[in-house]
Length: 250
Image (cartoon, rainbow, N blue to C red; front, side, top):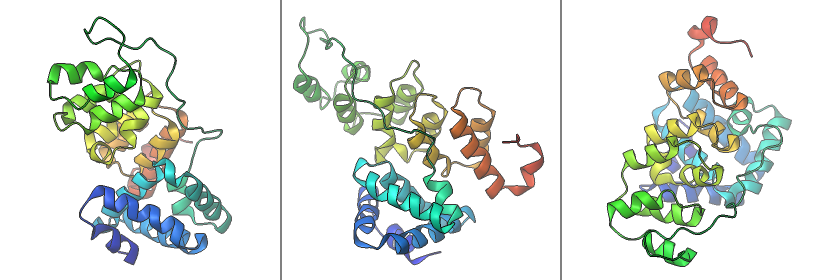
């Protein structure tokens, strides 16, 4: 267990933990922070429960757009200094780019007889009507989806169905991946990784949080992007080396 892992795990709330990691990226020199995160990631790979718990907050911070610049510097530091475990955690596919903004699409009316404005649809996302919330999960705008995900009437089953829905929308799946409330749920996390339209730069860090049988599902899937599948193979090899013989050659 590392000091950083203990500090993160001592915080009671996922959002506080994520924000603590984001604060550290701005408060510490990159070389020091890279070494601390490398040690934390290694402890998590070796099965330390507190480190594994803390690693979830690190992945949350990685998937938060506020940390993009800092984590890019950490990525370069890890590669340059040979911090293999951290480099594996921070790896991005070649030419990665975050999900695009919402596509042009006629605003839905949700039975009101006229297209509703974005503000009206965001307001509806705060309602408690279950039927309405399920319909709002088909909205084309990320801001509406973000509001629905925050609604206390949403259930894990709702979110899993939404993530597994095909065809999906990368920018909408991004909202789930960036939601600590839902991205921490194992079923939601696995659904995100298995959805081929989840941006790989968000799915790859989540692979480091998957359990053995979940990694197996990703490795055996023919639909996930090659970079996500390769990351899962690498995690299986690192965490469960006795399974080396029946893993695919990369």
